Length: 361
Image (cartoon, rainbow, N blue to C red; front, side, top):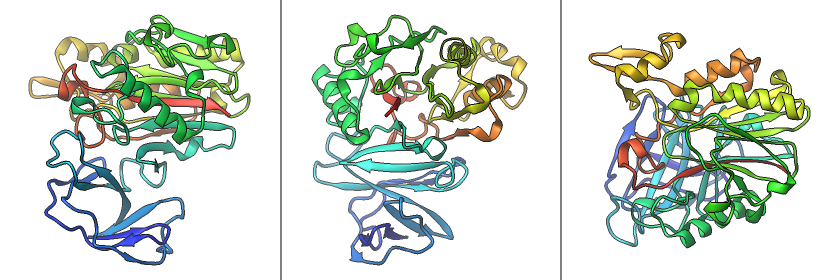
């Protein structure tokens, strides 16, 4: 495998025996090697966009290579080893719909559809923070069992990567419900530095104000970011299976219309990494909740049912008037990829939280 830097950096072959190589249905390849590339400087490959920091070729496919340090990382051996995470641009939407960015180790997914000068946003991974053990490394959620000072340090790292004031973040106490809060300047900082100040029982946040980062926390549930390109209203949604079944995105769009004069036809939406239908296996009672969505959302395999929460929320958005071509979905399963994501289904309650954040500049 050849690794090429997108800006005249390193190139070469992976050294050391890879711990895991796998091409998934989503188009994601994970390679965790015992060493970095044996490097030589090369020119930027002309077929790669300049905004991809580190690209590679493999069997005619193109992708992006990220580096992480193994210290404190689950299942990593030793404290001074480096590994590689390689993302193939394919069915998951890499390259075409989403970009991977890295700032001082903080590794983020960003939707190209939401790239406007006035708008900041990201879906985080677990890479680039200071937490250890099951929370390694970029755990952004309080109440997980992680040390609060590490969570706060991680939130500051994310703020530095995206360029906002961490003290002005607004977050809700998520309860898998359908309550949506309209955030104004009075709520600036709610849940930013102390968990007790977060907005009570809130799973959706919307605002028309500038400089108020809205943040939700996830470890399998579906993160959704919305922006009205006309009046620049923005929203973040925490949609677990219960919130999805209760149609929380309908509620969010309704609140945006009623209080901020948003128009669904002007909205662009990014749906981020979540537990995929490959791993979201449910019993008959939960499956029945989604029966009205049809076989694209829920289907039976043996004595189990699989539910596609990405598709369910995409259908809900379309039903409310958001055009199909203004919705992008990053179909990477959080449960399948411990190197990139926390997962409650995979790891149990003692795990960290990723974040989805959106704000007007």
